[in-house]
Picture: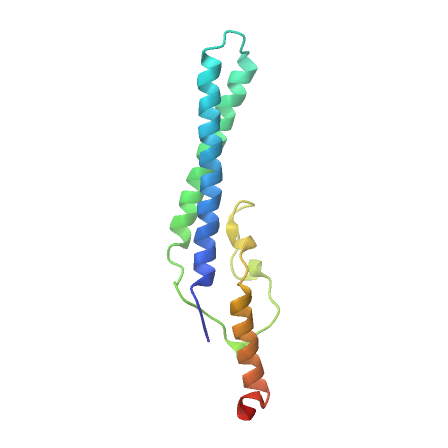
Length: 131
């Protein structure tokens, strides 16, 4: 049973949200760095921290770019085989690259779950014959 592209759409939407979050942090930190350059009272520790923050934000943005490349080959349409449904942990199928990987937060929308429920009912009960 086709469940459409909800899984790949969710992955890419989550990646976009995460990248935008780090772009915002990067921009705010750059603005802060520009203000600090004009301030003579800034300590070396403060400057070092800003440098570490900028590097971390750049690294996270690069990480999400890499993830986007990894997941770009995901099939646009996903399928559910109602005859083989079982409880399964997503980590058994796809290992998240690290704690930032959005794949561990992706869930099928209620509309897809309702479609799967209907398919199970039709496959394993007499409900389709009564309609």
